[in-house]
Length: 311
Image (cartoon, rainbow, N blue to C red; front, side, top):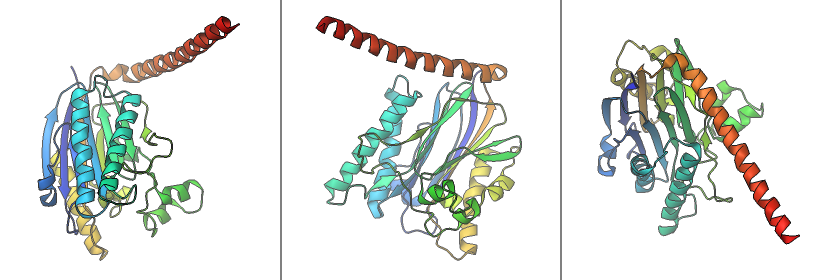
């Protein structure tokens, strides 16, 4: 018995004139010419390795649209061609390389470096585990045992203020600087490596439900409001549609222009060996640590050999 994921993505232009959001549903995404029309896709996937992501472009007009579309299409190629697409270092390298390519687009259009960009919030699903990778303020939530938990931390100005104790999470929700992000794909890189956040592998359980969303959702709906809308008895398609429509309604009710809105809902129908998942994750983490230590020791040994030769 392997993994089985019921998935759905819903994207709406909201109240904007163009749509800079896109999504990646394990290979499916909106083509650039389709983006302003929005769209939704639902599927059931049983592949042993699956990838899902929400992308929120920035730069205005075609620039933001292209940045999010380019990221989705690049992710498709990465998933097809990478031998170990789930490995943290491969993910980090992919995100860095994609960021550099998007930044070149700014330069090609005589724009300031970092002018064009995209966020990314990605869930990688294995037979019995999941991990997340993200840059920016698009979010991933896990709904487990009737409780919604945000499992990514925004790379944003207000999150820095919350971490520093300057404002409360409630104040952050309505803060005037809440849309200022500190990291995104396409930003200028001083060190040559993008500061993406990649989680450890964590165990999956049947009944788990993930929500991946752009800030078009989280700017209009508080976490407790999202939790109240999640009923695991309903389909992923119904839940994604409800969240997007409610986010648009909430923005209209507050008399603010709705941003582009994107939501992916993943319902974990079954996993492989769920009873041993936690043990397997711990064993994998131990192997990874041992491998890193051995790599350091080998490097030190090589340095020692060179020193002996010089002596």
